Every structure is written in C-alpha cells, then in structure tokens.
Image (cartoon, rainbow, N blue to C red; front, side):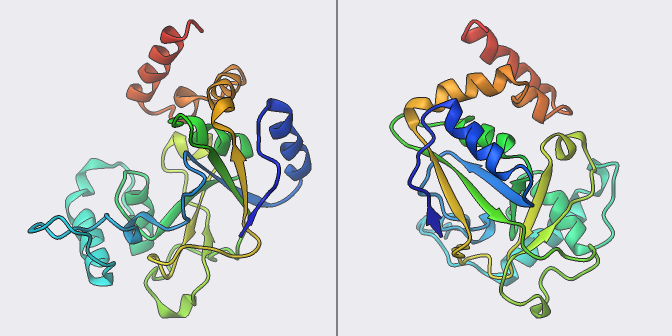
Length: 234
C-alpha cells in the first residue's frame, strides 16, 4: 500500500488528481480516518461480540452465512427487486447496512471525496483509497463463499436496483478473506487534511455532490442536506 506524499490541502490538489486519473479504470473509496483499513465490515473487530462480556469475537464464516440467510428469509417483502442468487442477496444487504464481505467503492473520485469528508472529524485527516480495478466477476451467479475465487478481491458491478447506485457510480469488491485487510502495493492512500475537510464539503456541495444528489431515493438524506445548507447559510 502506498501513502502518497502530497496531502490534499486545497481544491487544486484534488483537481490535479482528477486530471491525472480521469482516463484510468480505477476505483475510489472515501473514509473519514486515514488510518482506516480496507476490511469488510463482517470481518472488522467489534462487528461480532460476546453478549456475556462485550468482548469482540473472531470472524466466523458460519455466522456470516447465518446472518445472510436470515436477511434473505426476512427481507423478501421489503424490496421490489428480489435477488435470485446468494451474491445478489449479499449485494442487496450491503446497500442496507448488512455486514458482508463486500466493500463499497465508486468510479468517481469526487464521490469518494464526498464520503471522506461527509462526517469528518476535527484533527483527523480523512483519506481517499485509490486502486486499479481488480479482475471482475463475470456474473452474479457465482457462489461468494466458493474457494474457487482464490484469495484476491474481485470487482462487482452491482445491478442498479435503486437510484443511489447510479448516482454514486457504485461498484463493490468481494473479499474471499473478509477478516484480512486488503494491503496490495498498488493501493494508494491520498490524505485529506482535516483543516480542509469542511471547505471541501462545501465545494463539492457547490458542484452538486451532496447527500441529496447521491441518495436521490432517500427523503431523510434530502432533508439532512437541506438542514446542512440551512445551518451553514448556503
């Protein structure tokens, strides 16, 4: 993994990255803390805890399969689109906060920048992860738990089952070892200075990249955006 020496401290720094990368087939992930690890939620420490003492439990394949099966059983009536394969159910669950072995990415560097600074923390640099697209899964009928997938992450282009996937230019990576952080040498980490995070969020808002535009199907995210603009006199 490569941490680039230049930290994004002004709009020009970000626009130069856009100019460098807009012809490349890369994917981007924005995170509020530059020390974030590329570990899917199902495999992160603290995702599964012992109810008796509150201590973290290790990742369990059986528990991951159990929670996915429960989601498939209980969620059928909640969505217009009904998945037909385990991977499709996993993709649907990922978009509704189910812990899975998937990670969210965007093909837009600016969308990733928004998610990096959306909930920025004072005195903590945010970051954009950037990497060349890994090999793509040929279709969604493949068993996401199959050992035949090997160890390396694979790219998934999810079906556009709701407008936010389209708006966010969303893609996913499937991680056969979900409790092991992805640390390939070709992954770049571009820090965003905490002192610039609020200004960058405002600039992206001016460019039409904000909670309402990226979640066009969510009334809550739209009103959240209206409140943010009201609060800051936009």
